[in-house]
Image (cartoon, rainbow, N blue to C red; front, side):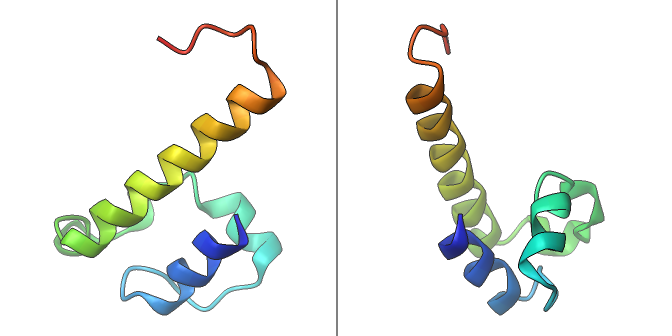
Length: 67
């Protein structure tokens, strides 16, 4: 998650915020301006975030059906 935080604060769509605050706001994409949401960088960031969250869920709840 720390790598995603570093990406967030370094890209145009993110702000330089503390890690603890990032944990509160990373799941609120409605705060990102629409013109930045359409960028390839933002889409790639979201894909990595989704992969990370799926992996965490698989590790913590292996019997959960993700489909």
